[in-house]
Image 1 (cartoon, rainbow, N blue to C red):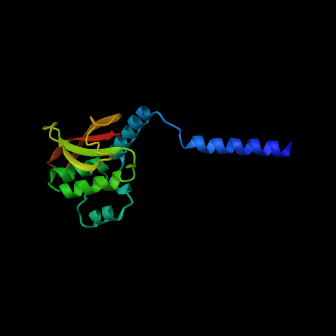
Image 2 (cartoon, rainbow, N blue to C red):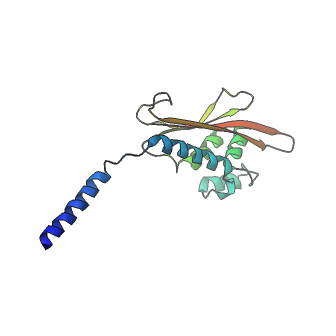
Image 3 (tube, helix red, strand yellow):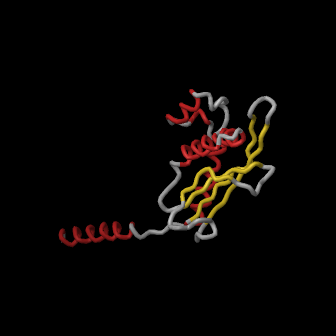
Amino acid sequence: MFDMILSIIIIIVSLGIVFSYFTTTNKNVDIYTYNYQILSGFTQTKINTLNNEEVREMFINNQIRNIDNTVAQQVGEFYHTGNIYLAENLTRIFVEDYVNKQMSFRVSISNSTEPLNFTILFEDVKNDLNSTEDGTVSSVTQRTIFGFIDKDTIYSDIVKIEIWM
């Protein structure tokens, strides 16, 4: 009797382990939610909450002057002042925690007066899927951001995040 109970427990545990490797998820719902979460974080996270040595150096070197900027606003400021390298670097710092092995990922920015002329700030392409059209599942979100470079200069940009697999 004890042997039979022990063998049933071993079979159930073994089947649980085997089937855990072959589970599937609803990719459509997950990728859209994931994309929205990244965009919301990018446009709502204050720059002074990023705990990163490179960001601290940007503060020390006076490259970041407004600690109340969100990450997206600071990226937009770098973009408008011609510091594309700093915009790319700050975008990489923010999104590197979101990048995973299954999804291709792209963050780009455009001046709102030229909404079709996007500059890629970060890109991580997987499995030779070069664009959202190549993937089986994709999600594209975008949001307009506003900010100040100085007292007299206001900018407006469009930030776009694309995820596909």
